[in-house]
Image 1: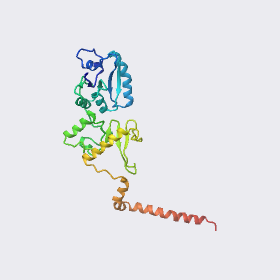
Image 2: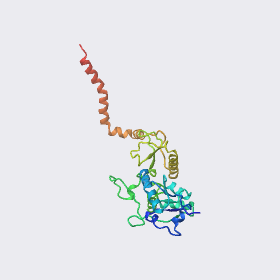
Image 3: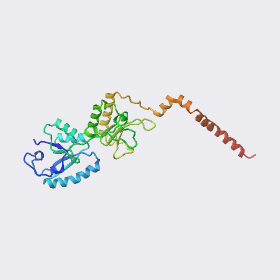
Image 4: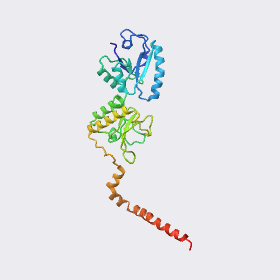
Length: 289
């Protein structure tokens, strides 16, 4: 059985000479006319993935002197599964997804590692908006967090490992926010929403205006199940259906608001009561005698 290879494959490696015992050669289909299938993800969006596909296929086919087909997988989980199931011969893959594939299939091996700025390693970081007051990890407690995917090392595994190393519970440190790649699961109660779960693609819809739950039901159901599991695991108490935060705020604080805003409320009452009286007086003055 041909071993399936996984790694962040450098083009220089792919375009180099094929040597006996080379794991890349071992991964190639025996039929020289059969295409080699390279699996890639789309961490930077569909558009850039399609561009990479269009550039890689002719280039790799030329330098490797045999057809190369580039398959775009929706996320790292799908890429890992495709590698383990033999649907792709080679994969440009994240470290964690590679481990998952290797656990499912023993003959999955790494053959190359990407270099960035001449280094084999890179750093992960929590990024905040320019107007944020957060200056340390502790300042992020209780904030919303956007993880890339549970199969992303730098976008999920490493940040959670950092939190754990500092004695912080990764499941409780941040407020709830569930992200899968470019997707976000959210729900807002009245008056901002109807309390239903909505699926949003943040890359294509940054203003969060289009609900994709009906168009992508499989992804939607998977993320809802993930959210419910999170709630059970952490003991999060969710608002009841029909909960209106603005109404509840007024109910809980009407005495305080009345005491603090009595003068303004009095003015509003005088205006509301006085306008009809003033209008009636004006109409009587204009009535012919």
